[in-house]
Length: 274
Image (cartoon, rainbow, N blue to C red):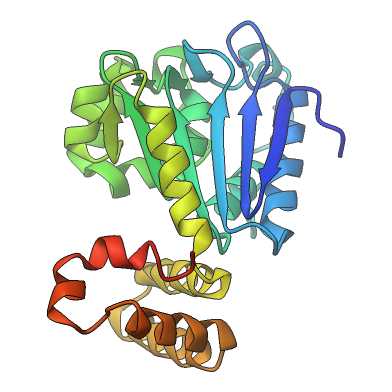
C-alpha cells in the first residue's frame, strides 16, 4: 500500500520503516492500518532478512493507541472470549514470528500500544537517558490490550511487569536494559551506527539460515521436546541448501578450524559471505 505515516526503505536485504506521524506518533486508526499493512508486507517479502522499525521523532518512538478512538469502540454487547486472535494481536504476532530478524530502534518514548509492538520485536535497543517505556492503560481504567500483559512478564518477569503495568510510571532506559526489556542501550549518536552495522552483518548471511534460526528460536515457546524436534528439522533442512554448502566451504578456506582463525572467529564469521 502507499504509506502516508510510515517511510519504508529497502537496501539489499534490509528494510527500514520510519514512523513519521507528528506530533507524537500516536497510534491513530490510520497509523494502525498502516502498521497492519506493513507487518503483512514485510512478513511475505522473501527478499528481506532484517527489518528495522524506528521513528522520525527523536522524542517519541511510538505513543499509545488513540484514546479518543478507544472511547468509540463498541460496548453495546457482552464481552466474549474469541476463538482467534484479534487484529492487533495478529499484527504483533507477525512481527514476533516472521522469519526475519526484527529490530526496534527506540530512541525516545514507547508508550502503551507502541511499547507493546516493540515487545514483539526480536531486539530492542534504546538510548541512555532518553528512552522511556510507559504502560499508561491501568491509570485510565483499562489494561494493556495489545499483548502487553502477556509479553511483558515474559520479557522482564511477573513482578516487574506488574510494577510497570499497575503503576503507569516511566521505566527509564537503564532500568529497562537491566530488567531485560531493552537488549542494549547506547549514547544518542551510537545507536544508529550500531543497528546499521548489525543489520548489514546479519543480512550478509545466507537468508535461509537467518529464517531457519528464527523459526527454530520461535519453537522455544513450545515444550522443550517439541522445540528440539523443530531445531533438528530446521538444521537438516538447511544442510540441504546450496547456500550452506558454499558458506561452510568458504569458512574453511578463510581459516575456520585453524588456531589463528578460531581465535578471531567472530571476525571470521563476518567475512564468510563477503
